[in-house]
Image 1 (spheres, rainbow, N blue to C red):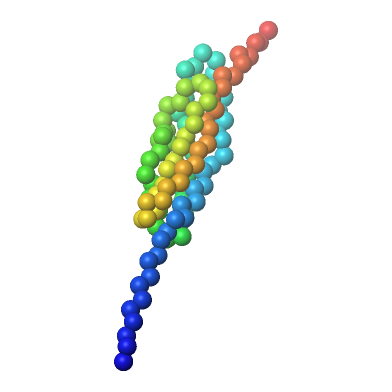
Image 2 (image 1 turned 135 degrees about the horizontal axis):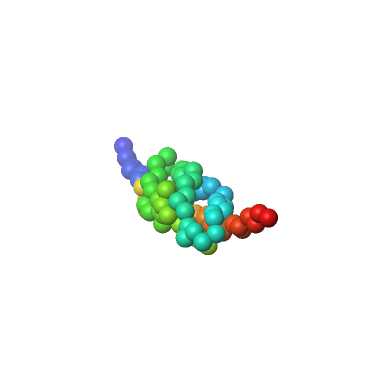
Length: 100
């Protein structure tokens, strides 16, 4: 009787899928340096069923200056595959209301 052993090596090359909110727009009073901003956290899914947050460039409730800032989240699966997604936080100054 002859027995053969067969080995399978499973390689996961598929990165996680990252979903982030749309760009966030906030208008602040003139001559204000910026404001704090919150958003719905980015989430990720993966074919392995497990994914972890590796990094994010900004935290919720952080102060953002006037202008456009990019918020980036990076996730990884157990095989080391990484994926990132970004959205913009746009802070603009409003106009003064002139009352006569």
